[in-house]
Length: 422
Image 1 (cartoon, rainbow, N blue to C red):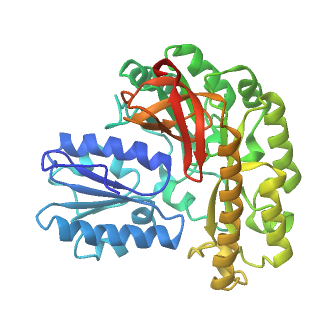
Image 2 (tube, rainbow, N blue to C red):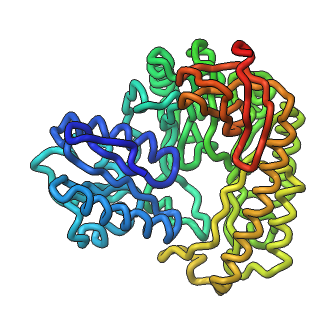
Image 3 (cartoon, rainbow, N blue to C red):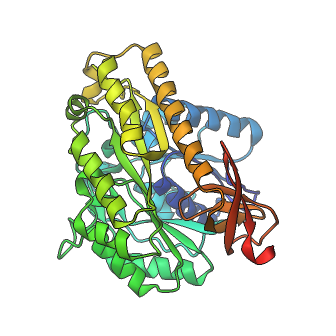
């Protein structure tokens, strides 16, 4: 969905990851500064064929709605296949993932198609954002790209190799946001747990987070985006145990629960390691909840292999699932493997989602009668520390952190009464 826009304010349509959400704010400011206040910017995702289909649909819809506005297409899908988007008659400009973060890319004399070799990019440019339009929560970039080559994943070819934002720049960004009223910051990246491997001294993600929280004591809440189980280290586990401002909600890039499937995916963890990380995090902080990315119907997956992934939902105690039916991406090894029939993929994804829905609903029910703190994002809606969507029984100003009592729950989330408004 677009996040708004008028003729003097660029309209940005964002697909995909939290890093894209951050980059959309950068582009909004760049386009405005370059005089492209009438632009519609479509920031695409390439993680699945469906994501690309939705992006193309959004481009055509934008042209129908705004026949006189300039349409700029960028993001991973545009980086990987710029010719496809340049050929669309609705599109005025195509920018690569590096070019979209350069204000010059939005200038009037810039080429219609500007997509460079993302693999040659060695640094992550710093972009200072003072806030996100209408949001109490902000996403910031701490890492970019990925050095791993999972057999199903095209994203490294859209994002390039792993590179980290220096710690001082992260702290400055978080401080600016906190001073501007942001109450929660989400640290985002393509492979965020690889943070620091390319920096002097090789700081770990856990070390970076600890130092940022120490440097910005006024920030009430910090979250982490998707974590690779193979790279969750002792520094991060200690932080989970002793830093209450780090929210007790971890999202893991698990992908499967069967060891042979994980090996064919070229993942760097196995089932036992995934369960170990979950157990160690729970030992460090008993109230922690977990989300996970899971792929249904990976090539060669049989029913027994799928059953082990399905069983992992309960065995690991997963609460929030992002389920994807396998989508073959041209140029990846998995696209050349023996494919599971599309109908089977869809059925397995539906079964995983049903298990996830049941787990989430049970978690919501377990919260009835407990206390929580909600970050209000709209007048009567927000999220708890565990990222449970919550509706309040009375309006509260957006951006407020309010203590609440959970009074009801349904499949969509919680209902809570503010404790200071009894």
